[in-house]
Amino acid sequence: MWIYSGYTKLGAHLDVTKSIEAYEIFTPYWSDLLARVIGPLEIAGGLLLLLGIKLRWAGGVSIAVLAAFIVGLYSAYSRGLTIDCGCFNPGGSGDAQPGELLRAIVRDFGLIAVTAFMMWRPFRKYALYP
Figure (cartoon, rainbow, N blue to C red):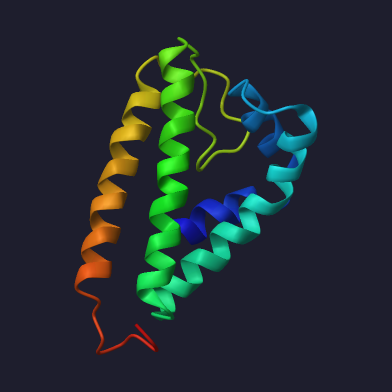
């Protein structure tokens, strides 16, 4: 998921910036900065998890990032914003549904549960260094 999410953000700097600004949390400067680094960082984190390099450390970072995403999603949801989360489609389609942010929150909690299980019981057979 991390690799695909990061890949969709590469080459779409303006769309990613627009998605981040839609949350009405960050200034334009911070939105621009986050848009530049988020895609490559998601890909790097996904590769660490996929290759089994430092699984527990990478899993912990993944959980922290997902928790930060949940805070941002909940902030937008609680303020009644109807926006595309920008997770896999930077810039959005422009026709976000009211429950989309809530579904993204539930999805991220599910990803936290899977990541926590992976950290608790890393599969060592194919991991390079758990």
